[in-house]
Image 1 (cartoon, rainbow, N blue to C red):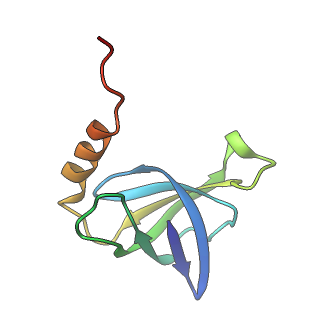
Image 2 (cartoon, rainbow, N blue to C red):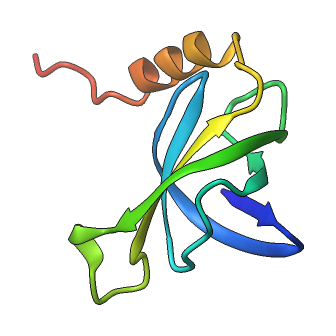
Length: 102
C-alpha cells in the first residue's frame, strides 16, 4: 500500500482493511490528523487500483517489530465509505483459504 501525505510517500503493509478504514504497518511515522491519499491494490479486484483519501487517526509503536523495518502501526479512516469493498474482501478471504482436508 502506498500512502501519500504532504508530498511524502510512505510504503506500508496492510494488516486489516474494511470499508471504513485500514490498519497498516510502516517504517515511517506519519502524523496523526494528517490527510492522506492511499493507493489500494488488491489481487483480483476488477476496479483496479483504488485511490482513496483518509485521515490518520492513530499511530503507535508496532510491538511485533520494535527494532525492525515496520516499526509503526498506522490507522487510517477513509473519508468516504467504500461500500463494495467488504463483499469483495469476504470473497477474497474465502477463496484464499486452503481446501478442506479429505
